[in-house]
Image (cartoon, protein in one colour):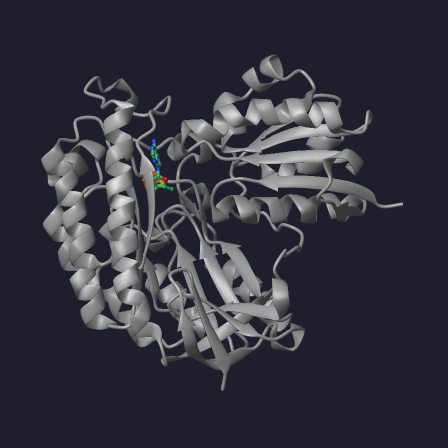
Length: 433
Ligand code: 5AD
Ligand code: SF4
């Protein structure tokens, strides 16, 4: 009889893919069916994120709940970035956990599950060329890792300490995976890495990859069954004209770009070690919209980084006004161990941080309210990938807007022209034409 697996995935798309890899690897040896109910699971895995402090605290209370409700024989494993970061400490704080597996050690999941107690959080382990088993939670969209780790040293970010140095996956493997996924129905290929547009920096063993990111995108677009290509996250520093040219001119590349700003203040960007200024970022965003005017731009913003003055914060507000991002992921700065910023003493109080976050989010909601009516009566190509309640099917435009229409599973996996009838801030309602 198949075993039951409860897997909780926190954090970013890289973690989503790591969870898929774990499910695939486990199923190579014996069958595991997924369950949403931890009390019937034989195996409970928490795939963690450590980018901010809050989720880390939540982890231990959650493990406590799992211990209370789980089957007696069920094992609990902690994987992902918090596993890399806390390592053995997890066993000390939660003795019922039977394995701790770091973010760069996913291929060892079977070994971990079959051991009495297992710990491996080596951030130098290189599984960039490992051929994982096949599993996709969404049959219409294929996540594919193109690199692991990150070489940047952003002062706030713990990721280089949990996912190690940046190594690209050889292009032959990526192309093979994309071909296979597209043939089996995934019209959309979603390339993943901490720093995707730095692709080709180094291969396993220090060899040189012959393709850069722009060339990789071009090669993937030549696969017949691939209709859409997305990627996350690019770094603004590597958005050169060659990249913008390929991005804008290739019709298979979705016209939505994530440009993580982090701060609009040149002084704060310097303290963050981001490598660009306010003006430089604005120029790149402008250039992107000049190359591909229909592109929607999303961003990440951190407020109240140590030393952020009112004027610095106003620079961030200013960039938001100028670029008019379609989507913003905004966070209060959270001090993370092992990072350069954790040593900074000029920290801000939580009241100021909360007030700034609120102001930023409210202004952004108002910007969206100004933009939303303009979607009415427009026609978009929508790739349907999900059923919603009350007889709606949901999909995305190439600009990454969510569109809902009345309809069922006959729409899934199809690209249809949709006329927007009722645009709302987060969902555009429309009709297939
Ligand atoms: N505090 C707050 N936000 C952070 N991020 C990364 N590290 C921190 C931190 N220490 C945010 C950044 C990044 C996103 C994934 O999470 O904006 O782009
Ligand atoms: Fe963190 Fe910077 Fe790497 Fe992104 S690019 S993961 S923000 S260090």
